[in-house]
Image (cartoon, rainbow, N blue to C red; front, side, top):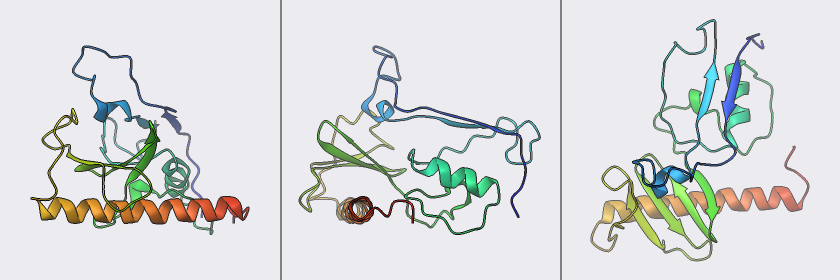
Length: 171
């Protein structure tokens, strides 16, 4: 059953690059956009509740359908990020300056979209300015995570491309 709510969803279409010289002037935050769900009833989210999760704009539709309790089948390249278990893998992917950026809560992997080797891997928990790439030749845990993220991106892009060329983005 679909719930009826009076909510407002606010999100951006791109990150902010106009904060030069401030603590927010970092490559990590350039791609960050908020998604704010205003729910005056408090049924969906408590006032002031913050969920700092990695999501992409393609997750917006699936997340809103999840909030509404929509349980019919639908096609979405995104995921309902508010109803995912913490064990589920989910990354945001965007392409800027001809480089894919695959983002997890811990890593940013820069990838050329062709090979299996990342161009750079950053641990944002210790380097949110993305100035010091991790040397994955000496950190096997990071290498395995980066490889997994590239595999995810390849599958995502292949699925999207196949749906696009076969006119199946909607089914």
